[in-house]
Image (cartoon, rainbow, N blue to C red):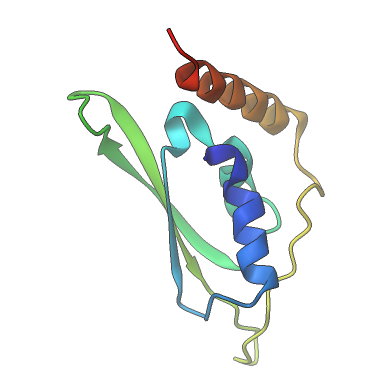
Length: 116
């Protein structure tokens, strides 16, 4: 779920489960969205440790509907070439707009998962 992508990635990193060069792929980062995850990877705590790109894809079973995949490759090298573990701070510097988008995405996910 998009609201958990960043927390899940931090948990994986805390347990040293990714090696340099590992690729993490997250689906549905446009719809319903994962704004906090994308912000952290492009501008926040993960931006120094991951090479990231967003890939536009057609939503499964919905012809003509765009969604995005986030593809992030773990760098984890210092200037001298030594491998290091990334240090993440989930909340530091996240702008208010990213939190507002995260809230809107969470509401969309809840509405999509509810009956009716």
